[in-house]
Image (cartoon, rainbow, N blue to C red; front, side, top):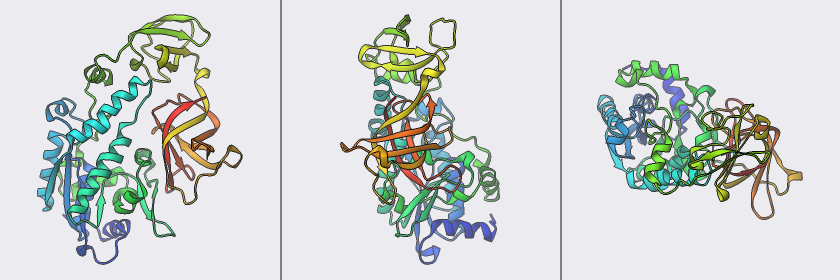
Length: 387
C-alpha cells in the first residue's frame, strides 16, 4: 500500500489545512464507489486522522434492483469493507426519511409541474452538505471530504471558492453550484487534480477491491423501468389526460399525463407528422403538450429561482449592466457565453449570447467565469421560465 510522495503532496496541497496532517480529524463521505474510497485511502496515506461516513438514503430492496446506485445495501457494505481494509473507523447514518422528503418527493412534484428536475443538486445541498456536514463537525472534523471531481481553493479574502477540475470529462461542478459559502469553507475535494484513470490506478496501489467497480449511473433512486414508474407509485392521482398540440394550433393527438414528457423530447410522442417533432412546451394549466420543429426549441432568455450567488461582488441590477459569464444549462453541455443580472424585484435573469435548444424549467443554470478547466464557479439557480 505504497503511494508516491509527489501524489501525497498533491493531496496535502488540496486539503490546504494549517499544521501537520496528524492533528486533523478528516471525515470522508464514502459512497462505496472507487472515487470516495480512494479519497479516504489517500488521506490516510498522507497522515490524516481519517473516519469514513456513509449515508443510508433509501430501502435496500429497492436499491439492489438497480445495482448501479449509491448509498444503499451493497454499496454500504463495500464502504465498510474498504474502511476495514484502510484501517479507519466507519459510521453509517440513516437519513432515509430526510432524503425521501427533501429529494424524492420534490423530484415527483417537479415533474407534475412540467419541469425536469436535477435531484443530485438538492441531495448535495440538503442531505450531503447539510446533515452530513453537521455530523462531521460533531465528530470533531477539520474538514468534510468527498470524491467529487471539483476543486476547492483559497480566495484572496480568505474564503474558499469552487473551481472546475483538471479532468473536465469528470467535471461535477454543475451539481454543486447550490453549495453555500459556509459549506464550501469546510469542504475539500482532493481528486480535483487527478484523472479517473489515475484514480483507478491508485485504488489498485492501495489494494482496494473497488478498483474496477463500475461508476454509479443515472438517478440513484429511480428504478430500472424509469422515472415514470416511480411517479405512478408516488403520485397515483397526478396524471391527467390532455391534448398534444402543434405550435401552429393543430391538435395532433392525446396524452395520459404531461409528466410523461420532457422539453426537447423527440421519441415516444405518440403522434405522426411529416416532420421531426420535439416537445417545445408543457402547458400544465391546460394539460397540453406543445410540440414543434427543432427551431421552436430555441431559447435565449431565462428566468431563475433559488439562486445561489458565490461571486465576490453582488449581481448587478438591470440588463444594461449584466455581468458577462459562461453558463451551463445541462450537465452534459459545454458552458456558453451569457449575461446575468438581477431585476429591481429581485428576480435573476440570464440572456444567452446564442440561443440554446431544449432549455427546460427545473434544470439548473450554472454560472462560470469562463469555459474549461480550473475556472471558478460563480453559483447558479433553478430555471423557472424561458423565452
